[in-house]
Image 1: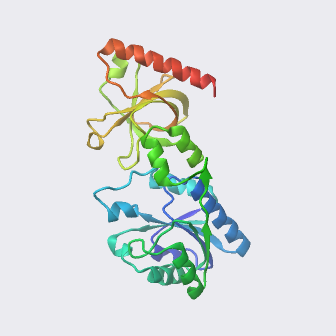
Image 2 (image 1 turned 180 degrees about the vertical axis):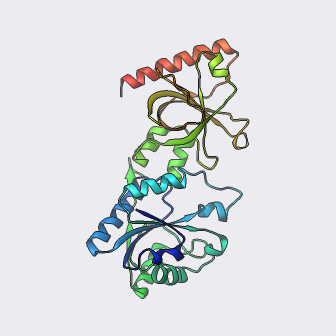
Image 3 (image 1 turned 90 degrees about the vertical axis):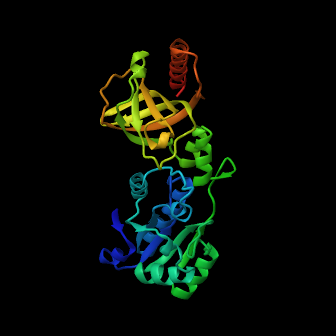
Length: 310
């Protein structure tokens, strides 16, 4: 997989026919992966290269800066997961209000046809493009007939009768339903971040925690306590993780505190990946340290029971 920054740089790296997937692909969930697999399969069948075009930052964060979407993963993780699906090229292009104002026909002709040389386009059923999202998959099909590329519109992928979609997954995470989110993603939702110094309260209580500083634009699950699995720098361990108030970072939104089970390790400045498997309980306010310690012991006991059932 080759990463290319900017549409204008693509033909410097490849000047043949192209099967191209269009979309934002935040989360690379089951619906996204069906689009990517179809793109790769079509490219092999037609003897073309396969590619994905992603606009960054997320278009909604530019069009509605007062309410940007909380992302399911960083761009780096998105690129990595798309590359794992066998795509030849990933093109990341800067998104701006000027780019958003391009008319749908101009986008199809000038960008897809002329600058990228698309032979076939693969999109989801709800894809929109051009002039602030006014173009539809049906419009793209008509432009394809005019400019000489085919269009494959993918039907939604459903999980338990619900369409797998980034918006739906965000809603599940915001209500702590991490197991349902995992079924739509095709993998447990995870956060990646570096361990930073906290206030040391966990260690004083007898339950040392690692404070994981995660990117501020990536969504956090609902506040509460979760059974998690931790990976990072030779480490693989079960953990009980609390998502709660963060007064210092990210404008006070929340923090992620990880208590490793049966593992003692100096984790400061290490990068950890925290996989959220199941919610144990809601966030609570306790009357004092004694009550909090009792609850943590109960949380750990329940976590061990859940682990034994894996």
